[in-house]
Length: 200
Image (tube, rainbow, N blue to C red):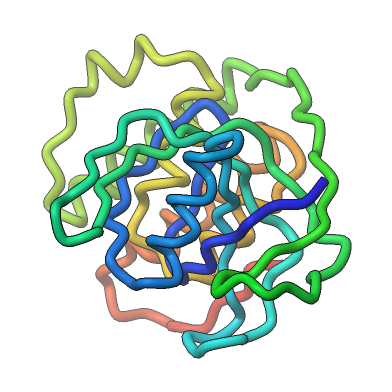
């Protein structure tokens, strides 16, 4: 399928989650206008570098524009609702100011976490939140299903773009959970010990 893409470093969308966006660049205003006139869908994907025309990562997430506020000066505030991850097959030659790709949608597995995995994740989340000074409603967290919990944390966690991409590319919720635990253990450290890390 053909997807109009919004390459934005550090911004990752997951299926069934929402991402608020402020659209102000002319090319992306054109992209939103085009999407609203067609199927309301655009793809969020990270570039390898923060520069025009930079190569793209292979995996992104297709989103549907839900709420939209069109401002008088042509800018938009939108809520993008995640639908499915996609894999880029090739970038298309286009005359539009925004980039487009040919992509295939990825099926999500329906795996859930084992109780021990869920318990480990919640424990590490508490440690990480405490180290970062975050205030969390833990009672609400315990009521979330595995997919909403893991993908929600992956989307909002303050990790670098490479880590966020690795989380998006994880093929299942248990794999994403395991990687999240590793990232929280690394980024949450405050003891000044060995700073080397591998995400493999």
